[in-house]
Amino acid sequence: MLDVAGLDFEKGGGLVTVVTQDARSGAVLMVAHADREALEKTLATGEMHYRSRSRGPWHKGETSGNTQAVVSLVADCDGDAVLARVIPRGPACHTEAPSCFGEEALAADALGELDRTLAARAAGPEETMTSASRPSYTRRLLADRNLRLKKIGEESAEFLTACADGDAGRAADSLGVTLEDLRAIVARRAAAG
Image (cartoon, rainbow, N blue to C red):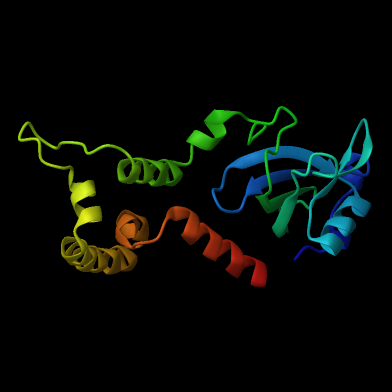
């Protein structure tokens, strides 16, 4: 996963910068520091450990329960920073916000926003597409299995074309799984190596 011996702790006075990212959504959760000991504990336990410049060693979530399960740790090209991809169990920020960078960091996830929009349409009241007061296309697809299967066939062809063109994302909304499902699969595969 991470070669701790290959990191340059000297450059940062015994510390490296750690950028912590949600492995499922891609949102940046926080930026902290770690020393050799913190990273070795992280590797040994599978949960993030840091080194606070003011408080010393710190196991994320030790008191709050808001731990971070490690999916991957990757050093940058200079070996003085680490990207930690994690699955958070609760908020990352001491203010109880999901990200130390506020809602803007979470809203920047366009695919996550699409997923939330589809979920809202599925759970919300019937919408209308036109003044004819018929259900929205999204609601019609969710309510009619045959129409949904036909649409999946069409989207499958578009998905294959998108893959061949290097743009697989444009058809992902019709695959029948949520974005969080896809992210979890990718995160599990990345953790398995």
